Length: 335
Image 1 (cartoon, rainbow, N blue to C red):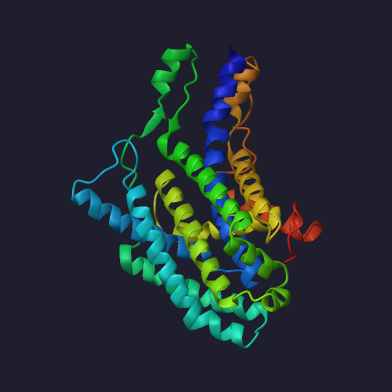
Image 2: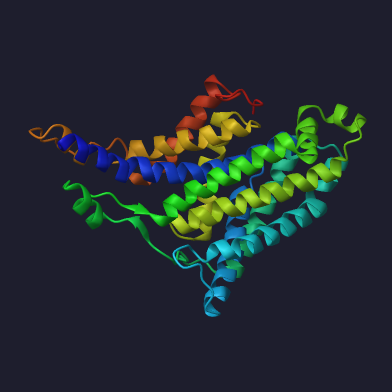
């Protein structure tokens, strides 16, 4: 029985939160790796673009709620999500035309694009704050839990309860659907194959008649969708605050680089690896140890690092990978 209680505690406080967080990082890392693979630069405005798309989705969600529109047990934000994606896509296409297109025509070095994206990042950050402010916002209406602690204890007779929030389950389901749709598009459609060809060999793709501007537009539209979906899922699961999306940029880049920058499968694997590492290192294991070793009285919380050092875990993982395997676990393009 104690082993089952330890397993439930592990699922409740480590596995389920890390799986949901890993799915959010994976979607964000997919957007980073897609832009890097096709447009050849690291987009530092990624986190703040996620925040913008989420802010638009929240504003539309509030509008729908004021009209009495809802999805019952599901968050109303799912209805507003297509509007957020469309607004974000229009914005990034406008930024590409007004900023990045000039540097592409000049065949500027990748570092120039990176510096330009840093400038875009500050503009996006200010725009998001103007739209929705700087305060924390919660917009996760609908059913709160799929499995409640009290119900789980009654069903199983265990002393440890399991809680599965609807936003966590929704994150995993939406991530699976989004990733499946993306891989189908890249591998089965003519446009997706053109994007892959352009990523593999730009000169050969141009000789084959592929329109580079169309590839660029598709890349930004898909990246905008991935960024908005990741941002909304992150906001539903936790809460929305613009600065949080600037902070999450480090774990997202760590996930993309760990998996192999430019490799979509690696981005997904990297997202879960970073998430599980962050949660496992910062979780106090004393409760699990108490179930597994009833007679043992540990002198502390059995916590390797405090939660305030969560992003330091991503930084350490990033540094180790850059030092020893710069192409990542799935051999993407070296940074």
